[in-house]
Length: 119
Length: 119
DNA sequence: CGTACACCTGAATTATTGTTCATATGTACA
DNA sequence: TGTACATATGAACAATAATTCAGGTGTACG
Image (cartoon, rainbow over all chains, first blue to last red):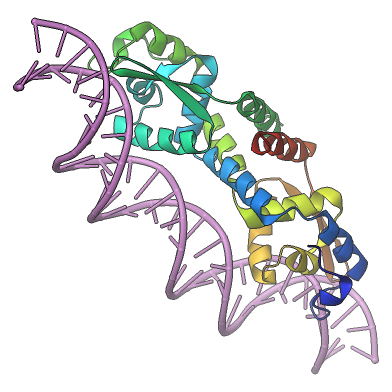
């Protein structure tokens, strides 16, 4: 798991104690990667617009493409990503597929980020 | 600002009322782009590791590169990005430059995201 | 059935991004 | 002033990602 002090490269490291302290605080790569995936998902204007629109109400692909001003194909591709990351869910009603947010944390992340931006 | 119903492409749009409602909810592109920039910043494992380490304590570039297991140059490049986005700040002490988080929202975003991942 | 329509998918293309390497700053200290 | 060291930077390269285009599902309804 956590490497000991002895394993730390002594050449580059300046503050050995601080580095050791930081090492014990490190998150597993698996967790870091999941977090990065999540943030990456929200790091694209088109996807953000989609998520924000879905925060208000469920929408079909067709409507979404109009609202976010992108092609249906592009929106569909992005929705697949968002689906994979469990950010959105969908229900089928005949030919139409309605998308909605899958997790209330997304909205909170969105608002939290807004506070950072508005400073 | 907000376009009226008449401006909506009637061909692609299915649910006119829902689309109109969504249009009134739309955020300015400027805001969306700022948000996307912020999330994009947090959408990379190396940068996330950096941010997480800085959540605990301030660290110099040298230490950071050891902690996140990346080259000093790579870390320096990433830090510049984080600096530009006002996610981290720094202070100089002789030859050494110490970095720390610039905004408490970052930590909250981090924790909020963790909750989404842990489900 | 077969046509229409909402949506999905894969390949291709172009744009963006992360890292490396070589070199440049800037500070301390002899 | 000159050397050492911490950090920054620019160019180059490889990897990733967003969009478009051309077709492929799946459902409804005549």
